[in-house]
Length: 227
Image 1 (cartoon, one colour):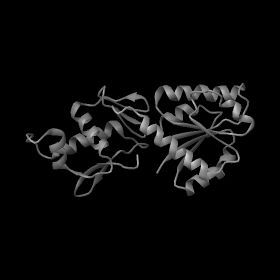
Image 2 (tube, one colour):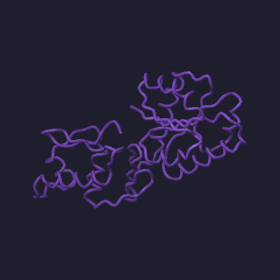
Image 3 (cartoon, one colour):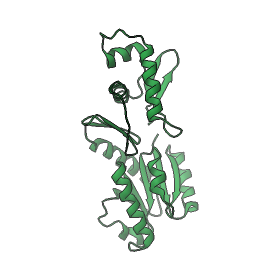
Image 4 (cartoon, one colour):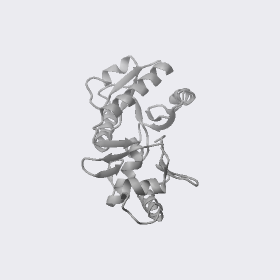
């Protein structure tokens, strides 16, 4: 299920679009473009950003929106789809902050199709040396983990455990299997080692808005397939 963050000039106007997208399986959050939406967005897990660009390219509001988009781009790799009127197409131009656009009146089928294509394109274009799960990024080349662009301090085993689970998202592993895969067959510690590392890992990567690792009762753990 894809998560959409919508930034709009008139939130009331977007409510109908929000309802339509929900019916088609997309989860939406909405913010007003007069606010500092970049700070709110960076804290949330989402797959694509919709931005209402229905205004003059030279207006202060449009320039503020574009500046916030640049700020977001500096902190996370997130596809951006603009919602424009015929008159507002000039806002698109050659802006690198915008990946695609849809012209009003919006057709839900077209919008959902473009959304899925832009997300798939972004995921396929990602460096093979990284794993992206929402706004959690595991940079394998640098052995770094970040959420919303903020680097996290993980121990080597925490990092290896997270990387293994994220590469196999949705698949359930017993504690014994995780010991074998992450610690190695020659490790003689008990399976409580896995529980301790999972608990520490959760304390570092999860909060009220982020849930990545799920406990499967009487079996073990899995990395959420819905992230």
